[in-house]
Length: 89
Image (tube, rainbow, N blue to C red; front, side, top):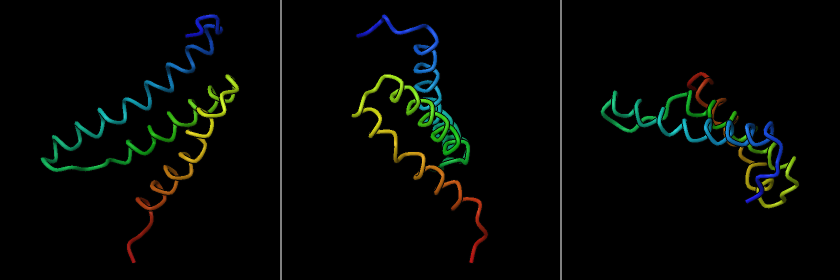
């Protein structure tokens, strides 16, 4: 573990992890309220924000594995947001 990282970047990484983890709490609460499994739009927004922040952190760290893990996620989350907002055929 590298605790020599600046406090700012540690905060950025923690913020990204928090946003990414919070999406599951939001999904769980929405499903409990609906009494069925649902994926609210806020899940996709939190996914997009969390993945973007973690991607920036990974690029800053120059970690190719971490970067490649989060790079395609934004496209997937944005596509899901688009699909939820588009009008039915």
